[in-house]
Length: 331
Image (cartoon, rainbow, N blue to C red; front, side, top):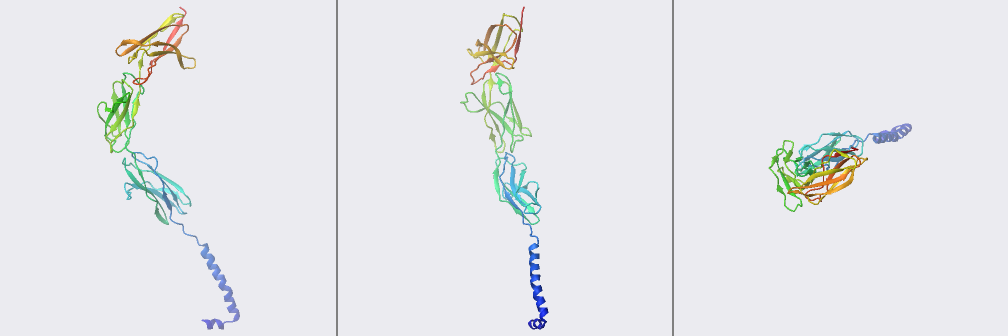
């Protein structure tokens, strides 16, 4: 080969030397201009939020690395997971893309594993494993009415959220003011319906008290303490008409008995609020009742109500359920 080349004319050999650098440079430029392959996506598992007894929201981010990428979460009680959220489109542009999804129904008071999964044409990748724990079953009992007038009926109702809510046995626990005795069951146990709803109907509220709800769910739980306020019951009786400068009699009964307590008789103002007008003192009427009577000279018509200034504790101040309008006439 060397001899053959050497025998060629000088001009030919020079032409070969000129073309060889050109071919090498061209090959180098072609190699440089060839498009680079996009990389597999990079998923990062974030934290679980909005955790409840039966669910949570899973969060994370994905870098698609330049290829159309899809993402979803795997979750379960072990690192085998076993459950997944719906697939989401994470786009293709390089950079961080937030991904969030809600789980399906979960068991209460359990530790769950989860991770973010991302996939494009260049590969499938898994984010790091993370954990969260679902909350215990719970409920918030609601009183109707609250506050409740002394001796009146009321209900305690609520909804259980958690595993085993359907058909759970539910008990109502109570301790009256001053809350020194332990909680004790009030009435019979009820059974929650298919949606975890329960209802207790009580015939008479006699003291402000604290209540708890206990439910045999999975696991069983006792709710936070809620307070039902009982207000004194007070009536008000007045005449409908009074001759100007004559006296009008304000009277009524209060339960439970609170001899010596003050009754504040208030008058409606032009701005729509009630303001103190006069007062009376409660006197003994029977074992369970106190009463009051107050005579006041009237000069103009007005609308009135009465409030018993109970000192709190077992019963709080109470307001007459109806207002009374007295029309003042000249004769």
